[in-house]
Amino acid sequence: MTVQLWALAMAGTVVLAAAVLETWRSARARRRALLATAAPASQPYILYFTGDGCTVCRTHQEPALQRLGDVRIDKVDAVADRTLADRFQVYTLPTTVVMSAEGKALHVNYGYAPAPKLQQQLAEARGNLRAAATA
Amino acid sequence: MYAPLQTVDHSALKVNQTGIVATVLVAFVGSIFFRPLWALIPLLAIVLLAGTFNPRLALFKQLYFKVLKPRGIVKPRPVLDRPEPHNFAQGLGGVFLAVSTVLLYAATPTYGVVAAATGPALALLVAVLAFVNLAFGYCLGCQIYFQLGKRGLIRA
Image (tube, rainbow over all chains, first blue to last red; front, side, top):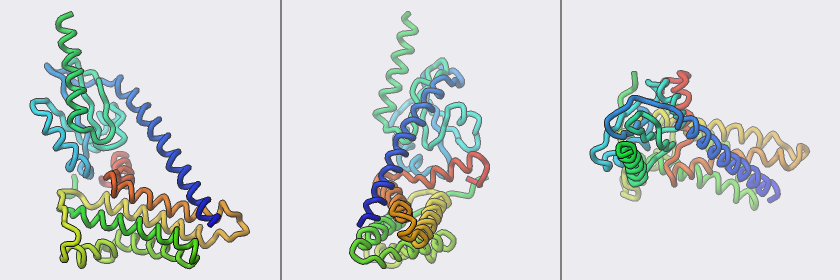
């Protein structure tokens, strides 16, 4: 019984440490990615990092992106286009980046991002664009 | 550059993950009452490693294809996918269980309780990761596969 309890404590500690590390890594990557830029466009758009081996991309992320309607989505193969993937600190797939019309990263989502979350982020990006236009 | 996408039955993967979680739990809890049940860990390692190199030897997947699917107990869920990341994840689980086995049988009580618990803890972590994949669809092995591919270490 003692061995099992110790094993449980050890596994629990590793899981907890991994969760803390993942939170820290994701926050650091997001902070760095928000400094990155890409090509400007007439409207806010989404950079969608995917890969051939990414199952969640096909089963969850792509249907969510299709629900967004008339939004420009630049699909990027994170393995083939490593330079761009590294610029946005892509460490997991899928990764979606909501870009402003000026080509600045506004929101970075590591992992699956549902459609309502992306819609909200795009609405914020469009609001920023309107505010800039009226200023 | 890439191997073409294939139809991968994700129900087979789910049955495999369920099998891993169940086996480790039986070994872990059962060994409290009957210590030889730890032998399920090396058996599981063999099943996972053998199944990685030869899908016909993947016990849980065969259970799905030969019993559960034909009888309609588990419905198929075909997805256009690549089997390589999933196989890699399964192999990684097998390697971790093999290491767990070594620690399980090498760490005698003279090494102390912490050393004796390292092997079971490793097996428990494999079960946790299989459960996370089963419940939330997050496959850590697949992410490692992607990272290795991105660094050009394997053809991802």
